[in-house]
Image (cartoon, rainbow, N blue to C red; front, side):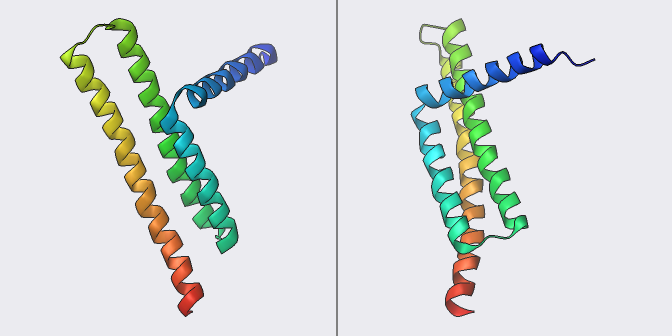
Length: 123
């Protein structure tokens, strides 16, 4: 049987975590602004259901990557409060993962939006 009280509590914790991440992480707020801009552009250009699915997946990938990066940074700071070369390396790799996700999202956006704009201008 599903314990609804526990379920709603777990959603509350998850919501609290998202709020903390957005409040404390500048890059996550920047990604949030990008999500708003991409969504607005998608609405204006009349994206199809498949295009919306691709857009949601790609910017979801970036947001999730940024949140995991935040978790990794916080864990590293907790266990290694003083400078540590390995800790720095781990943080850099995690940040690199976010960069890869953002590059993928950018390539997808350029492809989808570029195709839509091209077809509206020349089609």
